[in-house]
Image (cartoon, rainbow, N blue to C red; front, side, top):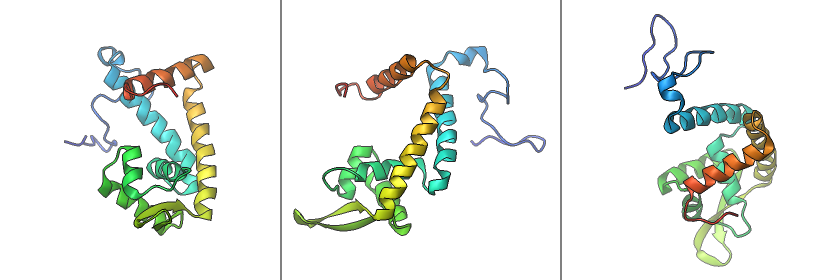
Length: 166
């Protein structure tokens, strides 16, 4: 059930800290709570940073995946990003509609279509990556560089435990 507004105030999740207030002590050490609020803060920074590029964080991820050395099909891009094929079709459709990608026959396998960046797609990708990187640096700015790197490594280890450090 979504949060309800009270007395004209915007709705917020029950576990969200009051504006400017500290989190509830019972929640402040809970991993799920911390990850959720960290992700929300980063998503907000990233959305603002990407706004001038006209794309979302999800669309940026697709552009990054498509910008590989070997052209990817929609299904291959979906697999790399861990999204279902239906969602990938919608994301590619959105990016194609705004002129950032196009579908074309794979020159190595004419039975397969691949997704490639357009010239505008390459420019948008470069600007969006720079903006997103700046948002990540801002998000991690409370940490010394070594701790920021350690946080990334720790999250990578728990998110992808079967993959070696790269």
